[in-house]
Image (cartoon, rainbow, N blue to C red; front, side, top):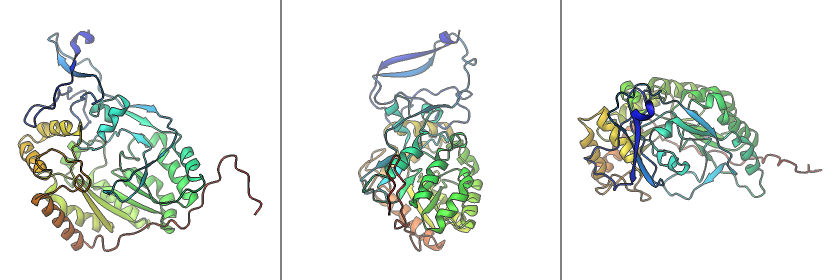
Length: 380
């Protein structure tokens, strides 16, 4: 009977809706309980647009809640390189595709369209794990001519999301980097990073690691609504404190800063992080590329309908009247008077909290390439 009650309408992809329009069809709240997105729009590469609708046959309460599915991916290489002038690293590793944390604002959501899935609820319920990551990494580090530079992990999806507890891919990656004396920078919202304190503290003694905790808000209710399966703000601060006490250099990322939503917390977040032991800080302005735009707008309409128009209006004022500007040099920080004052507030607050007094550069001089599989041992 459920097949009659829960049908899909397929039509040609329609033009993008205006910001005032209702965006997408919301999935039953009971089915998506504990998830960040409320809609599951088709990816931009799909030939048809699919929408859920009630055909009048009755309730769809018999449909099961959305559960997390994990698919194993077997890539040919694991280190991804980039030439972006906006970021401080030229290589990264993503142990997973998709992220169960379910952050409504996540700029990585559009990458799920490459897999034929929706950047909406699919992004946080249909995940991909790369169990061969450590083996591939060891092989790539062993290549002749490889030049070590800091590898960033967690810049796209969180390496310590809940499924890491089962797959342990991140720990295996750290074991390879530790053995090779290779520097790594980690970004996470999870307290699970404390599991690897033994490896991280060893690497810290050789100046090979920094860990950044992303702290979007100190408001537990806002965090629960916007980042439903990430650690609470209190746990993230506790994680910063425990890492710092273990001698591991820590950074706080106020990311993203969302005008009229968490913007007022900049100073309090930096002060709390500094008190927990952080020594560096950074921020990123909210980014709404591609499908993220409609997913985040839907979140605003559901959770903060009284602020939705104002939030979006301010965002446009920082992107030349658009919801998003992908231009290098502008996409991370925005432009215009409002973006300028956010930047100045952040700089002043960081200075007063004694953050960013010195930017730590990780060591690359100790790098020792892994022994390539099948390689003949040297006599000398």
